Length: 200
Image (cartoon, rainbow, N blue to C red; front, side):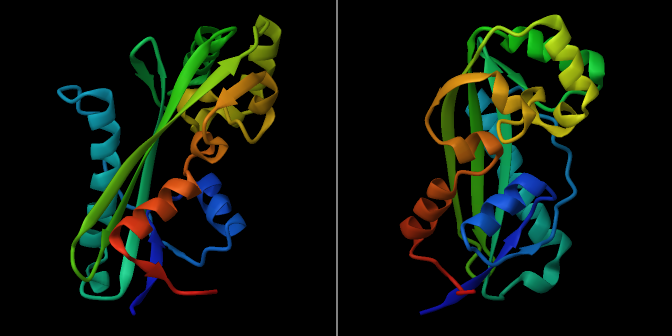
């Protein structure tokens, strides 16, 4: 049986930490692509395409991986409110506007995972959705949080695993998914394809 090496096509420290916590051995080779959503697609289609594009770009940008016993894992996360998607804020004003919108209400966090087999060029993808409920936030809380810098590289302008976690009343679904990578979903994709990872 083949035991594949895992390549993470992401620079996200949160995704890296989730894999480490799960005891999964991996190498980081981030993919350089445009993460602008294709508005001609549905929201699920947009996020899935970005995740898939990241995996295939990683393979193209690292041709030495081809025909090797490697699996490339990529992911993309978006926050959705009233059918509108929110990625990473472009500036502090946008971060504040995102948080005002999320205050005192529910939203969805969707993370698309894509795994590409470098030997067979097979692909497995899945989207996981978590419902998140924010308590009401004061203007001062929002300004102080944005000033901390934490929201600036995160979809929806908050991190559930950091200071942003204090804004959350509850969530329904995977916590890891909100952080940026559902480990359960990843294992499900491996099982679906019958792919095994090399041990530590």
